[in-house]
Figure 1 (spheres, rainbow, N blue to C red):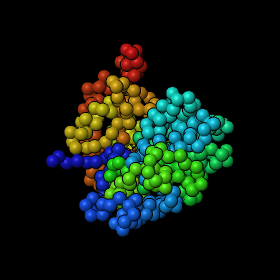
Figure 2: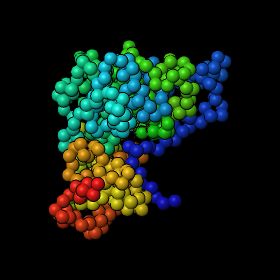
Figure 3: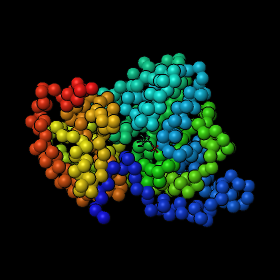
Figure 4: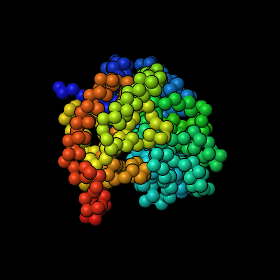
Length: 402
Ligand code: PLP
């Protein structure tokens, strides 16, 4: 098999060997339903409690504030729907223009259902202004949902301050912390955050398991209705192997947090330094904002992100574009658009996201191949001299055809 250099850890991560080992026993040995009355069921129940305990240590909250879900997306949906159902007279939601589709597309859907949504703007550094939040809050606001860290740029948002503002105004505050958990310290007991989403597969647990934190005392209306699992807050037989795996991953994340902020951050900084030294006409997005230690969003001027990825992929390098280049649209991602990155740069954006499994040697390999790829692409690019065709920007040209 070809060598794989995996710099796409914000998309998903490798399951840690220890996590995998932790899960195995629950498939063929401790397979009872944890809700069963018998001794066997009780044995399995203990492991649910253990996992809840470990996750509460990572988040600095109480074990009973943890609800297991199927993924980050379910957690986001559950949180926002619960806020709306428990505030039936309120029809306004505040979020940001740079959320993951799990929140953004839900909000767009809710707009079609008669809700009003305010999308907080970001500046060129990808940062929101809390004054905009204060100004947007009304007596009609049911919930504010602001991500803790952005999946494309790694920009960290001041969610603790935002939660404080919301609490003063009596408005529920939710944060999508899928990209923040395990990378930056979180102590929920010291914040006013009411609800928080996490996803297992971003912290070396498997895909298909998530958590919704709901602060004790916050009214909650379940998304899945049925059995009494999770104290009636999320029906459905618990995914015991994955829950146990997530508990282990949370334990390891807490242990590795220091390494994320030293070893991984050094690798990321080294990657950015070497890219800056070896490749002209680049821009690192969100550089002037607080950022996750593992994420680097780099825009390469006058080339296409998709072409860069394809050529890197031939060398076994996995990264991602910031672009949602779906349905034939040439539009750069909503995050880069919101940041007002010039089209000629936004189009050539690549996100590198590292983990504790990456090495310095891999960084060197990626920069070497990347320099080569960019040079080749710029040689054939009509924009290589920086002057767009017909005096128009690429995207504007494209738009005229629609
Ligand atoms: N929120 C953010 C910020 C994410 O990065 C992701 C995953 O890409 C999600 C939510 C969705 O999580 P899941 O894939 O577990 O549904």
